[in-house]
Amino acid sequence: MLRARFITQSFSRHFHEGFAIGCIEHGAMRFRYLGETLVAPKGQVNLVVPDEVHDGHGATDEGWAYRMFYLKPEALVEAATELMPRPNIPHFRMGVINNPALAECISRTHRLLESPTASAIAKETNLLWLLTSWIASYADERGSWPDTGNEHQAVTRARDTLQDRFSEDVSLTDLAHLTGLSPFHLVRVFKKHMGVTPHAYLIQTRVERAKLHLNGTRRIADIAADCGFSDQAHLTRSFKRQLGVTPGNYRKNIQNR
Image (tube, rainbow, N blue to C red; front, top):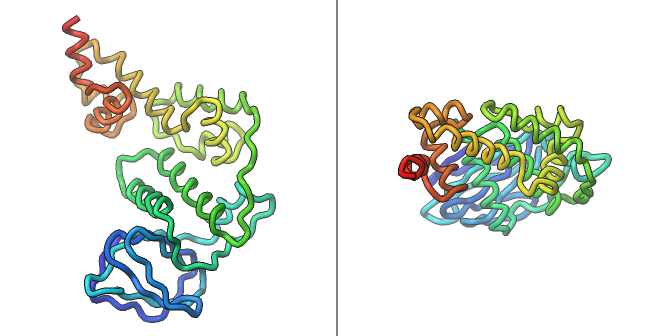
């Protein structure tokens, strides 16, 4: 991962052993790639495939700022497994993608992976969704989204695990192993049956557990830690998003009644 802003920097011709994909957050970048001179402005996606030579410099005097992922080819093969029966390393012909939604997904996922307080299941889910969406929309061989069946037993096992281990940093990989499904397929069938992703279900479960403790006198910071939140602020944000009030106000309402 790289987050940077360049004004006078000019990269000489070079290549990467893996994939590079990012979003331009400020200014614009100009680069020579696959025999063309391309410009990636703010809000667009720039990418290069392994071993393709390219350069890079600002398209204007203000330079450019971007967030980039540098990915081993194996990472894209793993994501492509979700979309096609015999996946190979995907290939992409374009160096600039005009897709604000994909650019926002890159930025959001990049910020999430930067966060030291974000959960493993949130990071894995968002990164896997980014890679599969990118491949499904723009790879030369795109494959198709697999159908979701009625994997009730797998969903029930994942749900019960999240309820039992709500205070732990349960990963999507762990859940997938327990259910016998691939990580991405588990996310899709879980959302189909439960209405939310496993990560969202875990947060809701933690909020419900925190509610049970707020009728006592324990410190809210201690309740947050016991329920799996990174800190009190994390609990407050999640609690208010789900219930419309902060934990402190919720406790006051209970005491007033």
